[in-house]
Image 1 (cartoon, rainbow, N blue to C red):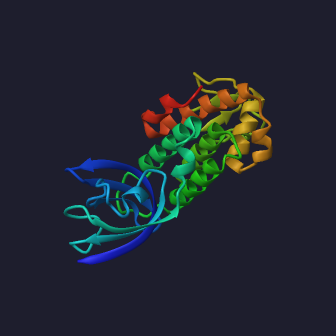
Image 2 (cartoon, helix red, strand yellow; image 1 turned 45 degrees about the vertical axis):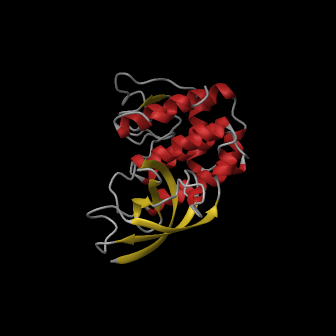
Image 3 (tube, rainbow, N blue to C red; image 1 turned 120 degrees about the vertical axis):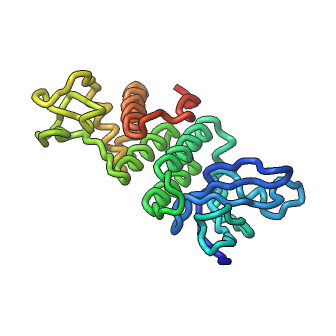
Length: 248
């Protein structure tokens, strides 16, 4: 029997029995972990409110077999709040829907429980902090998070040089299957021709250039979001359920 301590983001919760919950967390050192939190649905629970989606928490987990991944789920015996991002996210519909898509993305990219995913964890913490602060449009924050999640998982799209031959940009054609923008010679069937402003926006979001991103016109933001959603769906092999609730 072993005790584990780690900090993580609560991705989702599921009811279990009359008073318990199964908590899914993305942790710093142990990747995605599911644990049972006993009695947290009771009104007198001391730490049930801390284990809600969007919360950044420090948790103690008790595993009977000595391993977090094995027979039976570990127990979450303690939880301390590091940052209550949810309190500032759930009060705004745009932030809430964007945040929900971020949580779902992080869970989808960490499909093997117990595998460390430090970069994805740090991206999620930073993304939720930025979303909660409210300094940028929630959809831009979401698109930046999606692009960077794709990048750290090996699917970084190209928005300048040709994704196939490397021809220096700007290149006008965009192909999801090819990995981003392509030149006229490499253009496969089904390529689209987005505006240069939309491609510049996506490059800025991927690179963290918020000055350029915040100055972008809404029509280019909408076009860029469509490209990001299509590119993400291609690599995840199915879309995110939560994206359908994002305000258009």
